[in-house]
Image 1 (cartoon, rainbow, N blue to C red):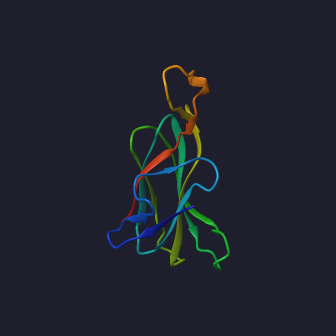
Image 2 (image 1 turned 135 degrees about the horizontal axis):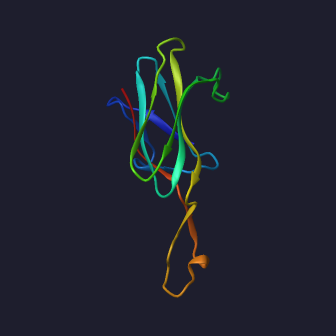
Image 3 (image 1 turned 90 degrees about the horizontal axis):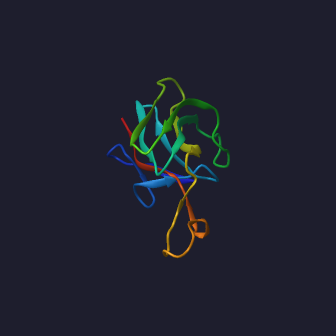
Length: 142
């Protein structure tokens, strides 16, 4: 889980800075909180290889600090490739007062790993692999 912290400039800050990577497995979810004075949330994303299903959604706030996210209210789904693409979700103006923002990837097709070449004599099939991810270059609010 990557925590997104909203700053005064209208962008989310993330530990380690931008760009950060989202993988389609495990707990690779970027999550933050906004209030209903925000009109939209946008993320600029692109794959390192292949294409990916990227989702940006708003959820109701948990009732207690130990609860998970509650009901999904609004979600934008996009098929993203190696070209930077903006994914935007519009914030409802009705109650509740605050929302949980989540950005996640559930699949990447066309490539699942990049081969690292360490030397010219080792066969590519024996080289280690790095999982291909979605690169997030910004998450902003307006």
